[in-house]
Image 1 (cartoon, helix red, strand yellow):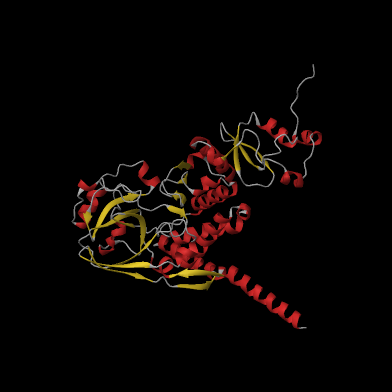
Image 2 (cartoon, each protein chain N blue to C red):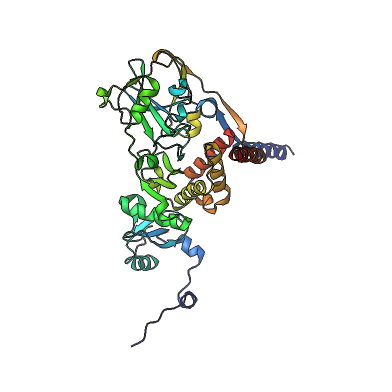
Amino acid sequence: MRTIFKLYIIFISMHIYSQNNNDFFVKDDFLFQKLRTSDELYIYDDCHKYLMNKSPLSYFDGYKEMYKGHHFPEEPPLITAELGTIGFIDKPFRCIWLIKNKQLYLANIDFYYNDCKKKDMNDKYSFMEQATGEKFDTRYRNISIGSKKIHGLMPATWFSDTLFVKRSRSSENLETWKKKAYLQMVFEDGKLIDMKGIENKTELIKTIDKEDISRKITQRKTKIISKSIK
Amino acid sequence: MRKLTKKTLDQLASEMPLISQNVQNSMFGRAYYYDLNDGSFIACVGDSPEIRLIDSSTYPAALAASLGGITGNSNNLTGSVPFKSGNSQQRENVIRTIATEVGIGSSYLTVTNLNDSSLYGQYSNSQDMITINSYSKLFENGNYNDFYCLLKHEQYHSNNYIPDDSAYNEYNAYNYVNNEVPQFNYASDDYRQHSLDNEQYFGSLL
């Protein structure tokens, strides 16, 4: 009788374990809550790419639409990539940022592949200079950051705020990467004045409820239709 | 001299020897075979999702040799090479053939190196163009079902694009492939995990 009871307990444990694996997933603070831009940050002498919670251009109102109404692409492509390797696609272009000697610089502006193929967009830099009031110093074109080319260095003197950044995922699996810490960087007039590591909080949550998602999708469709009617 | 005539598939089927599914699954050279020269589909042998390239003119002899046990010490048909060993044009030809099977017209597809192995592809609504990244890990693995699912994902975007809502577009595309594309069940573990993770992620952003 005791043996049967033990076997029953083992069976129940295995059942609960398999339910855990199938019905839950790890939600972390950085990927699910903070990451809201596809801009990338590099640190001088470190070839790794860092994902960012927001663009330092967010200081400027309407920055996501700064190229609108000209000959630039007006919407970003939809990108299929492994989670944790690229940021959240938030605008038609992506900025490449560099920290060198504690100074934050805008180093390049990148429109996505299909969109830039057929158009000459060399004036994207002068548009940016007009918008920010700063100039690119193109003497630094030979600096290599990861696999990215740089156009020059524009000091982000307007930026006095906090960034949360995390080294992008490379070969580790997603669950391992999610648990890794991220960095809090505090800037004043574009200068890095404080930096510390933040534990990335994770929680095991129930997988998405398809009925709940269907409801949200219906609400979105209604919004989209009412927008187009207006 | 006997006159050569075209035969219907039914006639051929009645005359040719039949190979059961079990035999196919255990036979040598299990793979999806594509022509080295133009990327056209030759045959699917057995149950392996691996893509292999072979000269279509030598395929019948290579298959016959494998059935006769001549190449019994190898799992691959003589003269065939794995997808990753093909040159960029040969691999692009194969992707275009799979895209045609999926229902994507050639003029809506670009295959190019996007310099990032974790990036599989993208869809640009403004150009109405699907781009498949030839530098992605999928090209290293050469799994037919992975490419099929990826192309279905991008095709879904092309047919169901909603402006200014990437989370909505992505959730729907992943949800569609994960639940309605039969090939998803046979994709590699990595691809399946990627697709399921992304469905959860974009679903949580809605």
